Amino acid sequence: MRCILSIGRDRHLMDVRSMLLRYAGYCVEEAYSAGEALAALQSGTVDVVLICHTMTATEHDSLIAAVHEMRGKMPVICLVARPGDGYNRCLNVVNAPAALLEAISQLASAA
Image 1 (tube, rainbow, N blue to C red):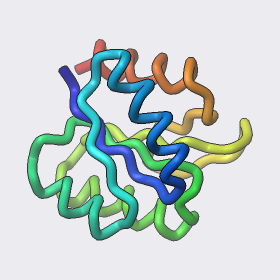
Image 2 (image 1 turned 45 degrees about the vertical axis):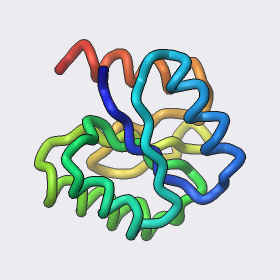
Image 3 (image 1 turned 90 degrees about the vertical axis):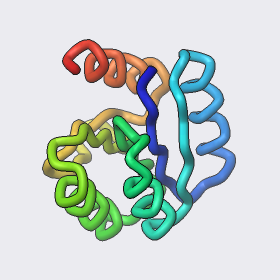
Image 4 (image 1 turned 180 degrees about the vertical axis):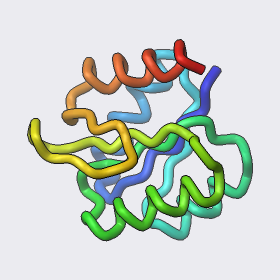
């Protein structure tokens, strides 16, 4: 089972997303700030990082950089609000349940 670190600010979105991911069989840890996310990354139990579109662009960039510095090529998924939005050095996925599950499934099969 892959463990996903879900990072975001909106607790309702995070709760719904975590429920969906757990129902699909994934372990989910949640972080509501960059500090919480970095602490979770240090635990060593995380396999995939998921950054919500509710985080600012600056937070996205710094979190992606920190993940790659701390954990090398660990997969990072950035949820975006609209097609065409996106960030460098992560897999950009439109914020929709089916798209998210498909992206995680692809990462899991590639590992």
